[in-house]
Amino acid sequence: MAISFQILFIILSSVIFAYLRDKTFRYYMLYNSFLLLYLLTRDDYTYFTFEYWVADFLGFRNAEVFTHILNFFIQIIFYHFYSLFALHFLDLNRLTRKYFFTVVKILRALLLFFFVFGIITYYLTDSDLYISLYTFLYLPIMLTIFVITVIKASKYSDKHKHFFLIGVCAYVAFALTSFIGSFVPSLNIPLPMAFFYTGIAIETIFFSLGLAYKVKLINDERNRVRNLVTRHKHQQHITKLQGLLEGEETERKRLAQELHDGIAGDLSAIKYNLNNLKVENRISEKTELLDDILVTIDKSCRQIREISHNLSPSSIANFGLFGATEILCKNIEQLYHIKIDFTFPEEELELAKKTEIHVYRIIQELLNNVVKHSEAKTASVEILYNEPYLMITVKDDGKGFDVHAVSNGIGLSNILSRVRFLNARLKRESSPAGTQFMITVNLNQFPEDSEAENSAKNALKTAKKNS
Image (cartoon, rainbow, N blue to C red; front, top):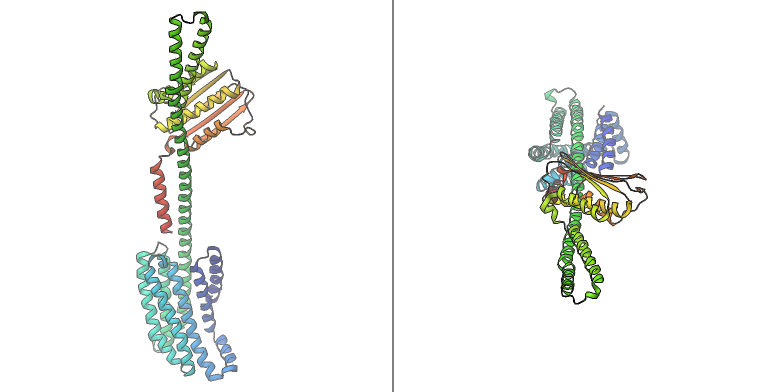
């Protein structure tokens, strides 16, 4: 049964090592392999068959000493690998690096010492000396390391330690009982190796539970880091969009100011001078031409004011989102003779200024598309609020378009950028009877700029540090 256990866990640890590439399971595979060799030597037929085979080369007396020493050195090897496995499984290689490297140096020194001492005692043909040193030097050192490791693991390791420590404590207790029972006959312990087999079975069961729990912890940590990385990348994308959109708004304001203070001012000055000439009757023979020029200038001034307003709508600051949108709809009606129905909630919503600007720009761009491309006679803008969702619908009765074939021009690209920035959903429907755009904004998911970004960055740093 014990041999079957070892073969099973050699295969299991090999598969896990191939999958995770974690040193922990490589050491566990090596431990189980050498433990399997040791268990095979506990069978008298196997033990003496090997001894007789060695006797053909070394002689019977030397073969007896060699086999006896080798039997104990195999125990040192599998305890060596089990100790390395335990240190890695309990994550002490990360959590207590100084202690970990100290133990590794001691284990290597013991392995080398008993290898050299094994050669010496073989040439002295005194395997009892080797066993005495194993009993009174190796075992006390390993038990000391075991006790200190249990204390360190209890303090530093994660929750999977509870399963593992129960199993390893039982394993050590039963192994010591087996060892003492084998070498102190006066204790009259029947079948001492049965204790060793029992310890292996208990350790294997609790290791399996600890392994399952640790794999869960590893997967949870990987998912947490993956989610934080995804969130950080998303926040970076949002920050980039925010920078682009804020740059666009800044440039709009600059152009609006240039139009208002520059060209509009010059046209007003020209109109003023022409009016003076008309009043003074200095160009009376050209009155009709002068009137046409004045009308053209008035029209140009209105268009410039309209462009300036669209570039930097002060109506948002003065009247809020609903008031500014209503003014926009009326201006488009007057300029382009398209009937626009505007529906909005009765109660004014307290929205963040950035949200109002982005929603206004989306509606503005959609109405510009209606004017430029749809050939519509009527259109409608509807804003609904069902906490926490803000729903914007823009419809027209124009000629429609193929939503799959049409390419994203500058206007539609701007709309999509603002929709992504708002973490909103966009739905498009179009047919020869008209077009409809529906945007749904979850106001609880609106990005909060630097605070969210810093939070994501800090969380990501913490996750990377812990992992």
